[in-house]
Image (cartoon, rainbow, N blue to C red):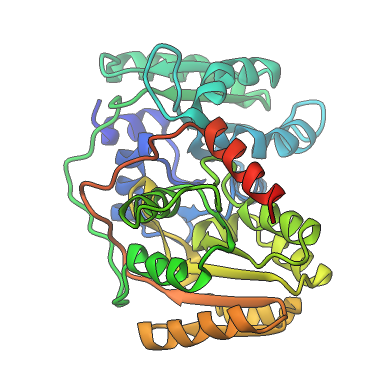
Length: 373
């Protein structure tokens, strides 16, 4: 179905959410027509943030908002759905559009498998009626279902569309780019070179895939690295706990701007604990590149000041390899909590692969390596 038809059937004019590859057509349509921040469309920090925006929109206008997300974001919306939107509380209507990663019977990455299995069960548990969209779904079917949903929405309930891969299409090409020059994979190569045999925790998405391939190209093992394949935004918290338990081991976390934004409160917790052995690197290309390149707000956020305000001790922002190498070496040699923001271009190799080991293999190798440190 053309995304224009889908949006028309929803009859809504406010959208908030977190981009998803299954919903790339919808995300590109919204960016193309409305931009990324404003009265009609906001790319949120996380899915719970999007629900809050939706609630505010309804309170101000009386209209029904739309919240879009990957199904991994269902966990982030359970609290605001149950304690804010639910008809036993405020009764705020909302339409959810959910990309179905890990659909049973469809091959996907390990972090999506269980989430895919419980996607519809979670909606049932939250008393949210839903329709599944596939490539065969027609505009007429969605329009008829929306008429049914309208009665539920008018009573203060929420409804959802669960979107299978390829169900929506958008013909207009949308290009995402910034003015930065360094590519993420090259940045990670420099981190690997300086960190040596230190521990690295990498964020979900292309960063972990690139780290894996760099180790393969170097003919190194993977035991020093924990590749966070899911739980977006939590790599820095994982790294903090590892650093606190292994105070004699230098721990590096390779974070992304979208991930850091999603749970930015973790930065305050890290700084409050002040682990002398932790280096927090945020590679900032101001985009959700792994799911399509849609913008984050991190292009206009001064992360260096955020880190300083939280209480990181050694804080640096870099935009070229010369400054990056200097910052990495300083962080390596100093015994203090460090933060490095690296301005990064949007883009990755077309032939970028995925880890050939399982998540369980990675965990076991990582833990065994840590035991020996």
